[in-house]
Length: 370
Image (cartoon, rainbow, N blue to C red; front, side, top):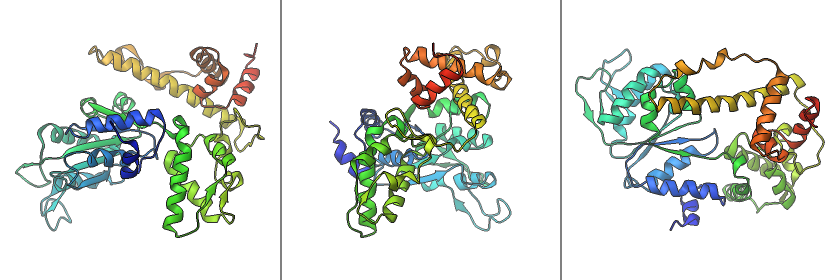
């Protein structure tokens, strides 16, 4: 039986939602093994915290966890950073140096943004996964390493494979166990406990008197879609607390930090803030619809790949799809969402990522409100 309170305090992952409890159960299942784990989640969702939890619950917990952001290292340096190099291997290599694969020997290596790893290095990384051997730049002798790999990405790796920006064999090797971190908008019941924790830590760290959050402010925060996820919530809580003079954070303390168009207006009778042109709003609406179509294509592609057929024989390049018109695309997206939601407009709006008010307006504009 998992002690969720102990887990939260130990690893700094706070939640009360069922979807997070299920994710934590998976963490406990895979942690004791040496299997490679792929963590998938949007930016700011807490991928590194999950990696630390897996390492902390593993037999390697007494060894070091090394974290490397593959997207933050210049392409010309990343091979040396990962594999290490011998003295004289290239200009500027004045001494031999261990890479992260070697430094993490006996412990865990967390490779964040694995989708940004250059294609030539993907081949070499796959070999390391399979053989547990590395070859420093400029060296002639391979070195055995004992490393547990955890990788993470905020990209759709299936799409990256389809676009030939990520190797298919490495993709299937990494996704043996995949942990999906739900975005904050999908677990809104966790917002109050996270907000309280961030506020408590801020006050303690800065040695200031306790600050509270007004009940109506919790509702306000839960109406927001949080595109920046937990990281955005933390930053906004701390910003509001730093400027607070009353000891209570109210709606007006948060309003200036949040983007009005990212609010869920289903149960709030607030004025509509307009800071984008209608054309931009339409373009974003179409993009969301196309993104859903893309996900469907990826599912079809994966099913076909599982039958060892070529996707190119069945589905043309996505870019070749023509867009007949904004209106037709909007109609199709709304129609599909309504069918999927069994004509519950509230659920359809959620599927489309727009407010119920916006959906009603679209239905009227597109003459679909009959």
